[in-house]
Image (tube, rainbow, N blue to C red; front, top):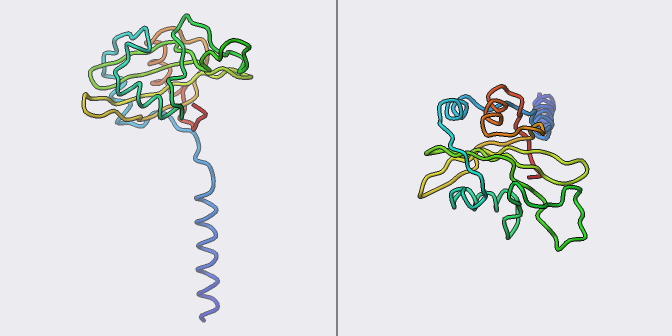
Length: 162
């Protein structure tokens, strides 16, 4: 009897460990956040400097860098991941928008191939948190395009690289 019990426990632990080790499948924006994005009025933010300070700080954390490694929409950046220049940023802002409590940031990340990412932040004057983000299609031009892509499920959550 004890041998069977130990075998059953071992199989259960092995199954749980295997399930926990599998990567989570990408998912669309969760319901509560979906309501925020759907109901909010996002004002256009045309510059990194136009984002709330807390959002810029959270981008630093998300990027894992000491400096905000993202160029303005019309500035040069490392589109191919390498550059002979004086190390321009590896990311470039494409579109951003903020409401009174949330910000959506859509940017291109250089490399081979380039990727596009969206990040959703909840912000207040006292605290800002990264809420959700994922890989996005290229070619979105406006914050309304980004919002539609998020709400349609086109953009799925995914881990970095950010």
